[in-house]
Structure formats: structure tokens, C-alpha cells
Image (cartoon, rainbow, N blue to C red; front, side, top):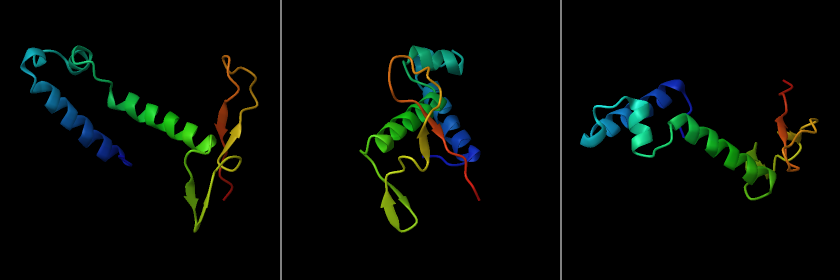
Length: 100
């Protein structure tokens, strides 16, 4: 999972070059190549992975290591949102701000 902008840019360049190697779409722009090859953008994939990870953490399928102890970050890192607009489901979270 790329942590820095430099890493993300490197992966993006690799995907750009790889999609250009497909002769049938090599003349198209990058976004058109992605559409023609039915590939999501790397930004979309990162966002999707973040949402999946949040689901796993908040529903107890995955645990995070905090310090030397393992705990589910329910209530410490994420808290239920105070907003009542949830589009038909009961799970809406907000990230807690760090205090120190």
C-alpha cells in the first residue's frame, strides 16, 4: 500500500505505461484507456480499500495493533457520526481528532 505521494505517482506511471502497451487502446488518453479496459483509477481503488478496511475494523473482522496491545478501534479512532443522514443505513462514522 503506497504511503507517500512519490510512491503513488510511481505506481500511477507504471499503470499508465502498462495500459499504453495494449495496442488497441494505445492511441487513447489515459482516462479513455482505463474506460476501454474497464479498469478503475488508482485513486478509486485506494478509496475503496479504505472503506473496506473501515468496515472490517468497525464490525470486528479486523484488529489494529496500537502500541503493544491489539484492540478494535471502535470508539477510539472512529465514532458514530452525529449526523442523522445515513442514506438508509445505521453506520456513519467520523474520524476522531488526535489529542497530542
